[in-house]
Picture: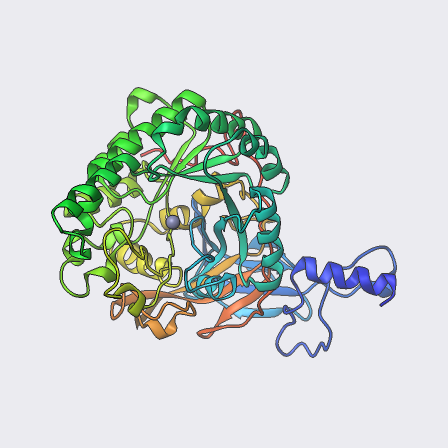
Length: 509
Ligand SMILES: [Zn+2]
C-alpha cells in the first residue's frame, strides 16, 4: 500500500463510509471523502436524499426534504432536488427525527450483549449513539480502560459509542485523570452510591467531584444508599427471607431518596455537573429537584421500566424478569415519572439496557444478594414510547425527540453535532412510520437477550429506516451495516458558563 492509498484507506475508515456504498450505485470500491488537492483522488461525496417527510426536532416540526452529503446533513428545506447519483428515500407520511441517543447501556462485562449486538439492537430501534461504560480490566487504570474501550468501537460497533469511566475508591490518582478523560473526548464517569463504603469515602469523593468539575467531566450517580441496602439485606437474611420474592424489600425507596438528597447536596456543594441515572420514585424526584438547592448543573434520567410497570409485576414466578435496580415502584411513582418527563424535571429517557436471557433471569440459584438486575430495551424503547406516549396523546412528538435524543446530546457534550436535524450536524436520522401497527416480538431484537418485557404489546408507529452518519444502517427490518462501521462519539467537556452544549438541557414547564 503506497502512502496515498494508505491515507485514502484511513480517511475511509475514519469517515465510517466503508460499508456506505449505495445499493445499485455500481461502485465496487468504497466511496470516500475527497482528500488533498489531487483531482484524481476525488470521488463524488455520496448523497442520501430523504424526500417528502416531516422533520421533527425538539423545538419545531416542518415538512422538508433532507440532503445528507457524506456523513453530514448538507441541506434541509421544501422541494429540494436530489443531486446526480443520490439515493432517494421516499419519506412521504413518515416522521424524520434525529437518531436516538441513549446515554446509559451495558454492553460489556457479564451481560449477553457486546458492542456489536448491543448497537445492532440500538440502530434497529432508531438509536444511532449509545453511551456505555469503560470498566478497568485487570490492573488497568481508568484511562487505559478508556483507550482499550475506544479501540474496540472501531472493531465491533455498528452504532456510534461513547464511554463513561468508572473507578472506586475515589483516589487522588483518579482525580488527576479527569483532564485525560476530557482530552479523549469522553468527559463523564460514574459513581455507585450503592457501595457499602460510600459514606466513609465522601471526603475523597468531594475531591474527585471538584477535579471533574474543573475538567468539565460530568459525574453519573447511581442513587441508592449503600449502608441502608446492606442493613436491609441483613434484616431479611436474619428472617430467612432471601428469595427474589423479597427483592423490593431489600432495596427500600427510602434508600433511593436518601442517596438522591446526598447526591444533590454534593452537586450543590461542589458545583460539579451531575447526572442521576434511572430515577424511579416520586419522592426521589422531589428530593432531586429540591428548590432549596437552586439552579444546579444537574440532569436526570428515568428508564422504560418505571414508565410502564409497577411493583405488581415483581410478583409470581415471572417476577424476576422485571427486576432492576432500583425496584419497580407504585402507580403514583409511574405517574410521577410521566409528569416529570412532561414538565422537564426529568430530562431524558435512558434504557439502562442490561441484557440477560430469560433462563439467566429465572435462574433458581439467584437470591436478593446474588442478582441479575436489568432488562434489554435498546431495541424497543423508542417504538414503545412513541406508541404509548405520542400516539396516546401524552407527549408531543417534539418532546419525544427531546427526551430520546436532544437532551442527552446536550448533557453529554454531543450537541449540536448530534441530537438535532440541522445543516452541518451528523446525518443521524430515524425515519418512523407513525401508522405502522406491529406487535413486539423478541425475535425482532438483535440483542442476545431472548426476551423483552414488552413482548406481545401492539404498537402503533415503528422506525422503518435508521441512518448513522449518512449510512443506512437499518432498513426493511434488517441491520445493514457491518461491525466496526461505528465510531467513538467525541464529546465536548461541560462548561459552567456555557448555557448551550453540556449545560443542563431542561425545558421550562
Ligand atoms: Zn446501569
